[in-house]
Length: 136
Length: 129
Image 1 (cartoon, rainbow over the protein chains, first blue to last red):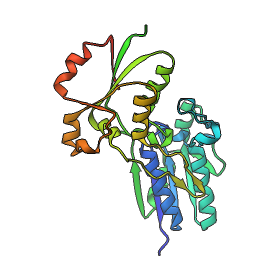
Image 2 (cartoon, each protein chain N blue to C red):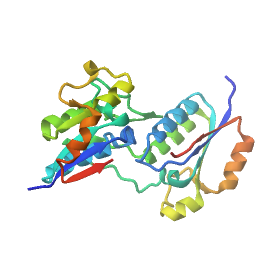
Image 3 (cartoon, each protein chain N blue to C red):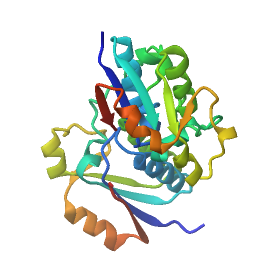
Image 4 (tube, one colour):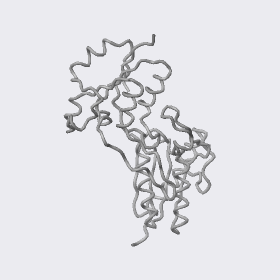
């Protein structure tokens, strides 16, 4: 299979939409197949890689911290980067810098980087295809 | 005595995978524990929460795997059986989605849309989610 470069633009913040689950399923599938992936994390999505996210127990459902095993998107981002390293392909995850500053989420998973709309432009120019998953 | 509150839940499957439950049904359960007196009406897409036997595979990203993926029918049953929160479902919203009554949890009550105004009048607070 020919290795492709695919760019994704994400907009939804963590814990507010089902879009991100769809996005991570597609990202995982693309990297598993050895494709290079660019992600432009825009607006609320700039918080996906924020390292201070913390899992919590769910006392309403009677689950302690370990049993609840609550997902954090920072773990999913880190797992995606690790998968790319295993597969020998590239994930270039860019957090929109202004979106990060507005939200105070500047501490990001190592391997992601701060960027700008110019990076998204460069991604689009260099990619075989682009998928925007907008917020609704 | 807590104020009687009718909660009409219409927004559905919004971040349930990330939260591992529906944030509104979770809120109802948590508030009931604090002494609230809730009733829930599922309408619109939320009627699907009452369909028995549903579920989604947990998300997998690389070596990270979700182990506690949500099951909304289980959460509806939890409201009815454990929290004693009545859950009503608008039957017209089931019908337009092609959901048969036989597919719906027996523990919920089906009501017609025309009965909603009178039902609302029985409550001190009506919240539309």
